[in-house]
Figure: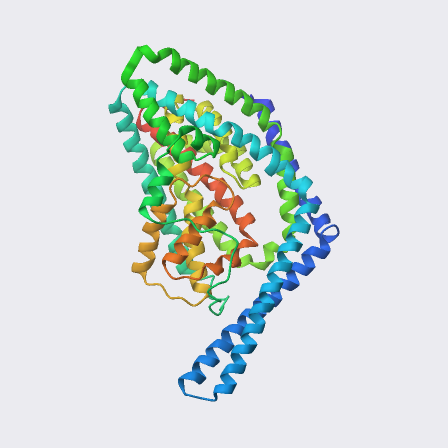
Length: 482
């Protein structure tokens, strides 16, 4: 396949991305202190007031319940309930004001967010569906027969399931070890409290609907990666079964993949501007102080990610030996892109190119990597158990190890097919919390720092999928020597 960039140009891109990253931080600090200072201060006041009201509401309801239990003064209980209703109404008004302030701040920063969200990420999404379809079909068709597809697919899924379980289990172990939620000590919120994040349906029927496409065109139009993967597998297996008769079509799809990768090179030239815009907007909204607000939680989560990197590195070393060092060096650009844009999907085309340059057979890359974006989002999965149990701890909800393991298995299922785009993990967590009677409003505890956390887990997704592709290539004796 076509190579997008060569050594010198590639190193310059890394340099430009770093420049964009640090410029974004600097400009973001200036905007935070000046341009959107009013909105930030007002939002901070509102958050403090809502939290204070919520604490009072919790205490009042507890006191009312205790008075009712001992048949105390009815008038006193009614007055307490009336006071509670006043605070609930005040919180609702504050929430509306918060929405308007957020809209005002977003309008002021729209030119920066446009660089990453409205231009770069849209350009990436423009090519991802076609790239997944063309490369996966070619990869399956080139494997030659259904037995080869089954053999490689089995090895790939074995790695994915193992990595997913380790990632989820690591998140569970760390949050039980550090217990970051205990310091929050929050009362249970009102049942109707909204987080602004829609939960994902957990029923088996809805899950199947998310997996199997009713139209490949609709799946591509909405960038439903898992549905595209399923259709591409059927298409590729059919091409392999028919054989030489469809060779021209397979060649055409291979040329399409080359064209898309060439387009990727053009799009990647815009990456430093996207990184600049994304970092400027994040720092302008959250400020450098966001690092101090939840510093313990952030430090523990990123420490967990580094530990997961070490586990992936060690697992890769056991299979491909010292070449794992070269692999980590090779994928620094896509990892940096994923980190800066909070989207592992944005790094998909670049990751594919780097793995081929590393020596992975392009048929294996075309087969394993697209599957990884549906089945092997290691960073996102570690975050799911970490965040879910953190929220439970914050409200003093004690979950047994058995319940936590059940939650882990539920997340193993519901996380599949979640594309590497911002906030996808929160959607899955919202649905999981409801299933285990944990207040969904607890997601509000993480919304403020989620962009910062999303950066780390997106970068980890890229590393996990890269190691998986290299390992499967080695298992199939398709990893070229240096």
